[in-house]
Image 1: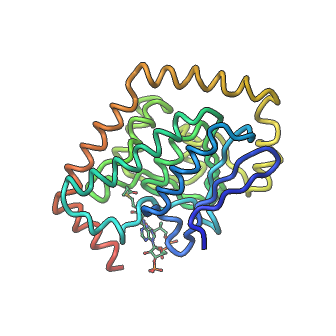
Image 2: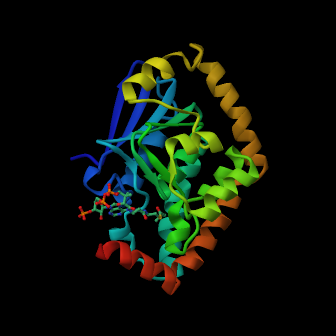
Length: 248
Ligand SMILES: CCCC(=O)SCCNC(=O)CCNC(=O)[C@H](O)C(C)(C)COP(=O)(O)OP(=O)(O)OC[C@H]1O[C@@H](n2cnc3c(N)ncnc32)[C@H](O)[C@@H]1OP(=O)(O)O
């Protein structure tokens, strides 16, 4: 079974995270697949990219079973920086990007969504930067990207509280651009009229945004954020919190 499914529908590129038994958590195979897709599809024919999850989850963040083997700061940094590079590629993808959160979006799942230009969810989705509960920060550059997308106080509220928000609350705070009953209503009520037909207009606008992020050294800021997380990762509190989850 492919862990990441690529589909082309009505001029859009769909990426579907496909590990439903662990709520589409991200492991190394998923990171590698995403990196390859983002490289090969940069100049593809589709006008925009949509990322979603299979069955009824978007993404439960990093695969805690796999990454719990990483104990030291250096080991953690290597993994975190790898996904950080993938999310920077997402953030600076030359076309519009959309996260359609078809269910739970937790931890790194919210970091992936933050890298996208737009974020939508189904009404029953729960969303949160829960990393704080695991005694770490966002480790894939999510905080730096969130501060580009939300007003300062709203971004910090989501990060500092580590709260799980309902879709309605996440829309109110500005993390979500809208809520749709399902993928089909998202497509007919939003996606099909969202973008002009002239693809060169879409990419030209995206370059304007990307230039701003390049000039404000977003890549470097994400790296520094990843270093902060790697330091905390090594701590006892983090390892204990993950063990508690894994013992459930
Ligand atoms: C490392 C980068 C930074 C981060 O992403 S930190 C955040 C990491 N993610 C988390 O802390 C989320 C942990 N998971 C949860 O809180 C819950 O499982 C979640 C997502 C709310 C779903 O709850 P439920 O729908 O009730 O499902 P459940 O708990 O019974 O889980 C079903 C199976 O999926 C597994 N799973 C869920 N999230 C996972 C994860 N992140 N890594 C590895 N395995 C994960 C879970 O262990 C369970 O497996 P099993 O069926 O018991 O074998």
